[in-house]
Amino acid sequence: DFKPPAVPRPPGSSAFTPPAAFAFAPSSMPRTPIVGGNWKCNPAKLADAETLLGAWREKAFDNSKVDVVICPTALHLPVVKADLEAMGMQACTQNISATGMGAFTGEWNVEHLKDMEIAWTLIGHSERRVKYGETDEVTATKLELCQKAGVKVIFCIGESLEERESGKTDEVNKRQLTAVLPKITNWDDIVIAYEPVWAIGTGKVATPDQAQETQAAIREFLKTAVSEEVADNVRIQYGGSVSPENCAELIAKPDIDGFLVGGASLKASFMDIICTVGA
Image 1: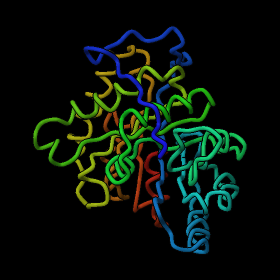
Image 2 (image 1 turned 30 degrees about the vertical axis):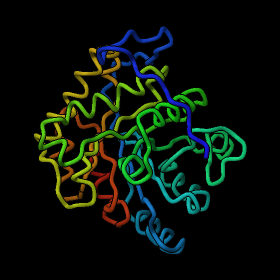
Image 3 (image 1 turned 90 degrees about the vertical axis):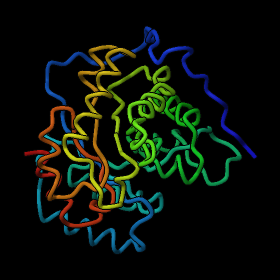
């Protein structure tokens, strides 16, 4: 069986010397918020997806104030892509291969995304890590391929309930980020999604103060590990049972730059979240 090559982590401490190619387009503008909708393995029928998009069309949003990226199933994506784009949204795959072209059954890679004009992919979602054994090294390989191809990445990190209760939240986030930092040469193509695993699909939500504290710690870590410019400019989403009812209080926090939404993105009211963020 094929195993993606191991990717060495930075030696010693979490900090490392960024390569000269590290880049972030200079900007004095505030971070544009970004909302992602991850449909996961839903809905069951294409007709249901089309019905959902029809409901979304009834409420417009200002796409100059908020970026919206939607992650349908791999089979639905090519069909709904044009409809998403017509609403000012962008299509995103939920996963990407750690390999290139060739005898890799069940995979799709960065070359396919470029050919299909799909600008975004998720990498490192907790369900990929936990249920499918995706390691930090594999996420690094995937991210490196995306960087070379110019594919934008929503990179997911986050701790389990056991890790949070053990006080290891920051340790886990730093470990997952440290694995990929040496592979990033263009931070304009990177969004970080902090998703506490214990809050995904459970109805449990990190309080706004908990989410802000953790995301501020992520930004502080990036100042040390990469640069202050990168830390100040990179967008960090929160994910974990986000809803129209709790999104306003969450987005008001200074280090929360949007959301990666699961179950709530399969409802017409997802537009309420988008409009709140883009208000």
